[in-house]
Length: 421
Image 1: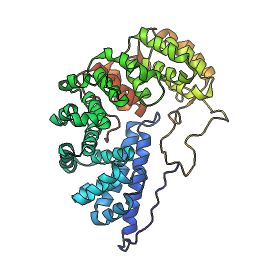
Image 2: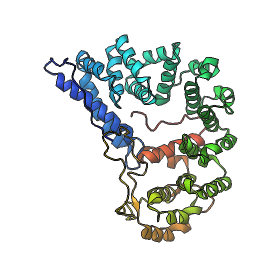
Image 3: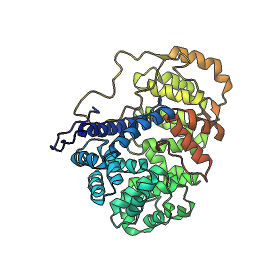
Image 4: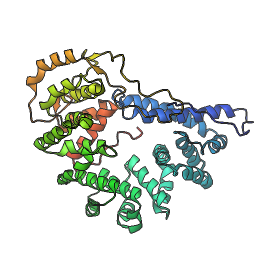
């Protein structure tokens, strides 16, 4: 993969400062991609993200010092299929207050799911004074693609669109558009829209895989924990939504049932990693010795170490429980310039466990933990603990704490730990 931005000039570079604005554009696009990678990393803190966001904002402000020059660069770049370009172009276009400019970027971005994400991110980044009028147009428009983008923006910013959300959930044409319908169901859960509960429950048996998942997910967030059973197929089938299903199910399932699901997963060699993740999310210390055993397999070692930390609170790096990666440990991501996937392997920035020291440390503290109880980072789970990690934990810990809080406090929206600070 690569994160290098390069574009061919169209000849529109006669302005003496054109190259400076082009640099602003390239830096903003590159840094936005870097931020998207940061947002789910186990070693990145909230402050790290804020620092990066300030760098992005500085580049964007540079672009806005001459919207005309900046738009000429955006217009040249918007058709290129590189992450970050749509984000930067829409930010400039909406600040230009030119409908044609905005339509050019939106139409290009809506051609792909990744482009739609970049559009929504740009509207999340914009001041409300600029973006809100555009958001209203998207939600009120007849084009269902625009409604979809509007719902995405509301999700990113946790904006309650009021009746507009109920309209999408009720309208037959919107229900037939699976991506739009699923996104609206997801947003209803994120915002804890109890007034939409009957509309959400209407979709729990929907034939579309995505619609069915998000309707049940939102029901659980709204307090219908019995719907966790409906997500069992998503937990046990590798593929889309498995990770999200594991994240919510093992926070809601009764401990005894959760252990049985984990036992069943662990018997399938293809699902061992899923079982390891589930153990960390459940937080019951009953399986810590099993986790330590799984650290002997280099493929599972880092993930098992993370689950060990989530339960015990023992940071491997800070407590001298990490070791050097084996010589044959795979390097991810690769350096293939043809690979445009900028995402990192989920284990990339996790420490490699030192099994001997970990086993010794666990033997010293295991008596402090009670089997059958749920722990997060070494302590029994409380709202106070979760709020502390929302502020001071790594990005991945903040994600876990946010969902845990939303399930404990059924009247409070799910906080978006990826939202711009």
